[in-house]
Image 1 (cartoon, rainbow, N blue to C red):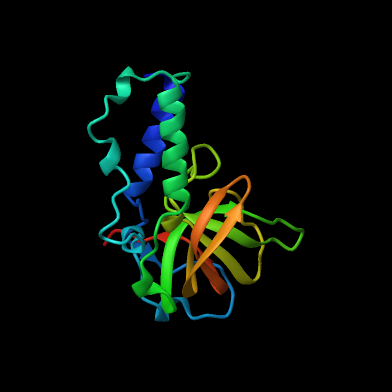
Image 2 (cartoon, rainbow, N blue to C red):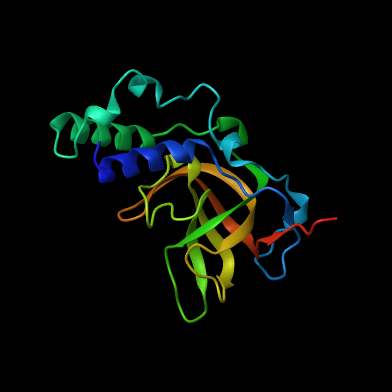
Length: 192
């Protein structure tokens, strides 16, 4: 299997691992009005319905035998992307107060800062690798712009989590949104 196809498949399967940021401590800077500490902290895998397994169809396929220009490989990547863009959400979380840590993929950037972004579970998602499935991307609209925030910075976001699709032509499809979100920088917990 060639490098591109291998990287694309690896990135797609990695996002299923739902690499959340454990051990979050209090942040040093906050934007938004919601109380971050009041919402329960979610892990990324909680956003995925337990019954959803997009890899089942590909388990018995010899991927190493496929080349990038193989029509079967191209078709398989297109099918996987369609499945991931339409990934189901955990409807039990729709409308609940939540807190989630992840990486920033900016959708706007003004002199006042970033107000709208995608929150993703692992570094490089949507920028350096194919986007994760929709149930692993949260569209965030902060209460106010957050100054000094950059692509792939780590943050904690809290607010009301809604099941809602948002498609960015370049960055992927999100299955969730948090509007009027409180945003704070992610600060790892200090060892005791």
